[in-house]
Image (cartoon, rainbow, N blue to C red):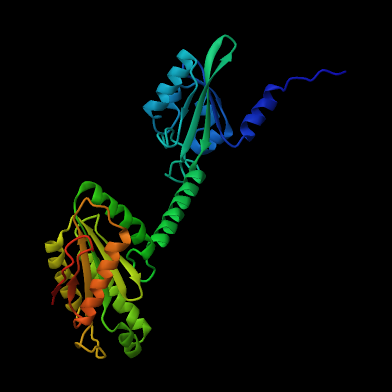
Length: 329
């Protein structure tokens, strides 16, 4: 049986240089004793220029204080250290194609491990290029954000969609009841929109929807205020901390904002421009209420606004409150 011969120093050097990551060995005096080809390529410093020199002097720019401190702790206390990319993006002056070709640093993940060379404790530094994984993470994050936006945003108007509203409406109503505050809901419908589409075509109709959605969104003042496309030419708005009196003022504000767009509508039976009808309701109580009740009340108020002549707002109280309605032109 033949014994396995240990690899020669030349063979080990070839192995170190073939590895697709950076390898550096620093002795107890913080002098470089190993500097592989990967480090040569990305630092722009040859092994001949690095070996025997202090680790703080061999890069084109000084290593970060965190890196020097990590080496000190590894050598003095035998502690392994990991410098994650999340906290230490580029501790060393290492570049994508070498320092002369580009000034863009590589994103780095660095591991420092204590090793014994003879009787001396040294530090093995392993450097991994994290650039690709960082780019992949950014792509995945962007893709995730796009998917989230698509799932919650109306594709035509850019405002929130029905799905987003349904989810946040229930949460907002629950918070309103727990905190004994107020919440206003507005149902908005473009008057005679079918006739508008028949007259001008769906392309112009889509543009009108975008304009109306945009002007409704501009009326919102707080991050908690929500406007969403409820379906077709119908929109819904939800404004926390708004009582009946303020809601009445706000309803007239959005009615006038759409009216002032001055979008021609020759087939409207009430005017020569695009107008909206609004139904709204509010809740200001710590008494439990089914989410559907408040929404259905606002919807019933919308139909009352339409029956009352359109281009107006109509208020209805939810069943447990004063049921008296009040119309406002």
